[in-house]
Length: 291
Image (tube, rainbow, N blue to C red; front, side, top):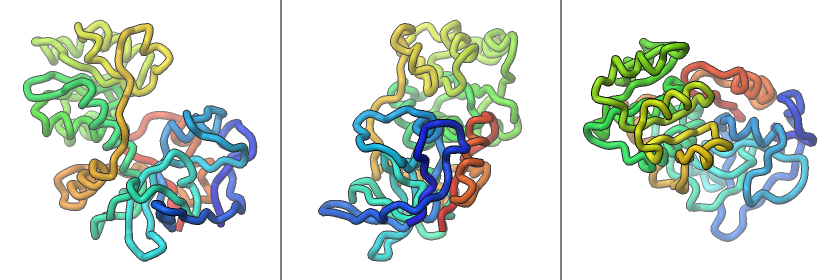
């Protein structure tokens, strides 16, 4: 089969289409003919040289841990894996896929799992609920887009940092600009204080969260994993589930939850997809289309 893979670690240029053995499903597994696969910072880290816990085997390696496609017996599904989604076929456990709602576009289904699952796990960890004021950095990104909506459904007020204020308002957030004076601008918007913060930007944005949120157990970073333990703040914990994925797929299909696809690339341009991911900024999800 064809896959976008790499035989050496490095920049986006090492990612190219190559022929690799087609996987075969074993007991308790399902093989999926991939139609679309989401792109994440996780994938670019794998390509650059990071090996996820539990991954064994050498190169070549196929990135990608979220996908949508059609099983060997003709069922349209979306699901998740640890690697191997940038390919014509992927084999996963039967428990790691859920049926795709009719009418849900392939590119949405293929890129759905990371944003909604990460966002819900993060907000569960932060115990965000009715009456809370939540600050989200990187609010227009994939996880931020989902987190705003989930937090609003739980009754929280959301302040979101980002460049596209109109987009953030459309999701239900109060927008605020990055840059010098950010902490003061947030204080003006939240005179009663900020209860929790979800950091999708790192650096100065995380420092602002530390200054604004009294309880460090209610600060979670998606990007500054190396600083988290020393600072006494959270990182995302928990496991992805097909139930959670199916729940949000149904909400999107019925029009009650918003999901933005920023751009799509064919498998042959997976390297370009990684270049856009690493350039940063932009609303929504980057997706690779396979077939």
